[in-house]
Image 1: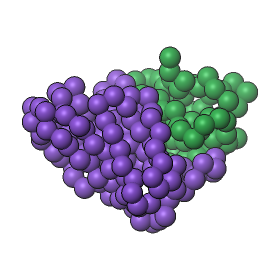
Image 2 (image 1 turned 120 degrees about the horizontal axis):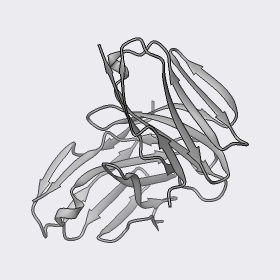
Image 3 (image 1 turned 180 degrees about the vertical axis):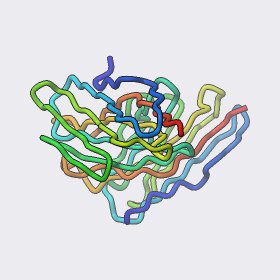
Length: 109
Length: 114
């Protein structure tokens, strides 16, 4: 049983395209995180959301708590955006995150 | 910036060896975690520690143990390495359990057991 589901698993886009990655979760949460992992392994945090919408540069993250759904959007995609994007939730109970399996994005020049 | 440092980026070990993976954080975080990451399975929690000398099993603790003698250091031990423990291992830390705190991850150790 996976508490966090992401789609798509893999995504290939042309440079400049608008990209959307989706995340659905099944537990009550206090926060949702979007993470980025480049080849080589290191994971960095992009956003933490508990409601509404956040924007950072070309990245936008939204969350709908009632529908238990979040989206990560990338506008004007660039080859340097190629990475694995991981959705993680901080459930209301317990101290651990639940992670999605990730979306592997490749942006072609 | 908080730093989480994993001692090795790449390791190759033989079946049956005892393997130590070290993780050090420099910002006095209470909570530390060890995950393994495999294609299609995402990050799976092996062990975590709320504080010094405390440890809790995660989802897949079999074949692993941990040690946290000092607050800044959390070690993962493979008692007798096996080929199915070939994986990427990621350490993470966070200040405490409050929901506003995210994780800071290390760069990962890619372990190959031959």
